[in-house]
Image 1: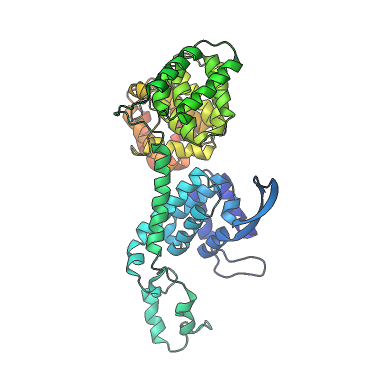
Image 2 (image 1 turned 90 degrees about the vertical axis):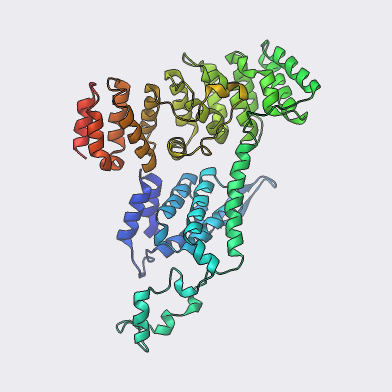
Length: 493
């Protein structure tokens, strides 16, 4: 285990773990073991990750501690698991496809709660392995064509020696060519099970979003009784009398949206909770924070009907009472925060302004892990339409678009993200450089744009070396007090 500590430390602390881990594995590769250490190979690394470990967990059903056997990788922090699985996708050609397939399937189907980003990374690994090995699996080729088999240029050497393959090694040809040493990925159910796991994960992800995503073109009919109750509730909720009474109205909202069979988005659209004052809204949010709700559906509906509309039209700093209640709610419901608050806010049709930028910055810093913020930026900058799907009420759809609107405040937001030691992916950095090149003349005299560039070239230097000449040319179009500092920093690349 001690041999792998440096590699695990890279996944835990390094800003670019994929590249650094690949370099470490290449430099530390040892095919033989000594009395004090195990061999450092790709196979032994997979073996370490899949090694069963006994952990003690709190059994809520019996209120006692129980011992559970899980893979070693599942004992690591969630963001470290996600980084390791992403590294395996990055270096999949150096690993046995069957081993990667088995590890990904075990992570996805091993039981227990799996973090959202870990699940996505495992699904990506499974997809990558499935694509690269589809023909091999479907055609059921022989074991000799598997990862561990001899390459073609060595097979001729094997056939030319009757007893020994390499004269200086005491290994016979039969031992090297033993088909019993390896298990082929030939099970007739492998194709089906591989496909089922990938489809089930993708289906689960889509269902979680689709069940709360509004079909903006439909007319949802609700019963007259529910409509009357919603209108009555709207009138009462606008007249704040006490926190106790407001909490009671929150319970009525919940019952009306679910237990009485009303369509949640239609009912919330009739109640219009976003029109309440900030104190009433904070009481509603705080009350709903104490309830044990679905991880995405109901929390998303609360955020997009109470908080999101207030922030979309924000022109002055948000009130402390509203921000405090929102922060506590977002810490509990992180996934709902991404889909029902962060995405629609950043995709605001007019672009974000300084007050909105301040709120988003606080949410990213205090409610999400830096690794999750990096993944969110990847989704925002490089994702397609499916990955940018957000949740909002139909009446607020006109305030949101599907693409980023680049403003000074948006550059300030990304500067805050980078300064918070969020390690952006290479794809994210490449997209930002592309946007910077396009917008340099438009923001040529903007100090906020210049400060962002200075922060970018300082914090993300390893990922920008290939863009050095382009950035020098781009910065040359700017004229601010930090232009010379940026050029000086680029000269050191």
